[in-house]
Length: 273
Ligand code: FES
Image (cartoon, rainbow, N blue to C red; front, side, top):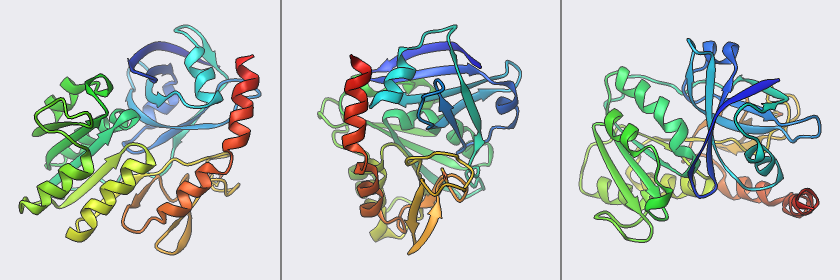
C-alpha cells in the first residue's frame, strides 16, 4: 500500500498527488512514469512523474480526471492509500546539451515538464517554455515554470492574455521569425502533442513527445500500449514513452484510444451509482 501524503486541486479536473514511495523516489529520472492501481479491481493507470524527493521518499504525479479510474483516484484524500505503484517505468528522456530548446506543455503535462526543464537547464541548455491553457484557470505552477526557464510564454485559448492562441501556433510563429531552436519537447494531451509536432515539422526541428497510452503490465509483455512510430510497432512502456513526434502515427494512436469509449462510459455509470 502506498500512502497519499499530499493532494491538491490545481485547476478544473487537474489534480496533484504526492505518494510515499521511497524506492521509486530513489531511482526516478525525467520522462519516466508510474503505473497506479487504486484497488484490486482497479485499472492500471500510467501517470508521468512530475517530481520526486529521494530524501523524503516521495513521488509526485499530476493527472486529469477523465473516466472511472481517475475519478476513483481523485476521490481519495490525504492519508488514504492506493494498492500498487509500479515504477519508475520507461526510458528516461535523453538529456544532453542541445543548445536552444523549447518545452511546450499544457494541462496535466505541466507536471512532467518541471523535472524535464530542470534537467535541461542543468545540462546547459537555454530553455524557452510555452505553457498553454483554455483560460487562465488552467495554468498552474506558473512561478515554478518561470523560475526554471530562461523565458516563459503563457498562451491562452480564450485570448485573455498578451499571447492568445495555443502552443502550436506559438511554435509556428516563433520558428517562422527565424529563432534558433535545436529541439522541442512536448508534454500534454495527445492532440496537443500532435498539433505541436505538425507545427514544427516544416522547420525540421526534432520534436520529442511523451506517449502514455492505455497500458496493462508496463513491462513490454502485453502489447496494450503499442504505437506505430516510423512505420514500426513500438511499445510505449519500454521503448518510450518518448518518441519523435514527426514519426508517430497519430491517427492510429487516437483511434486506439477511442476503442474502449463504450466500456469506459458503462464503467463510469456503474461506479457513479
Ligand atoms: Fe504492456 Fe506496454 S503496457 S506492453
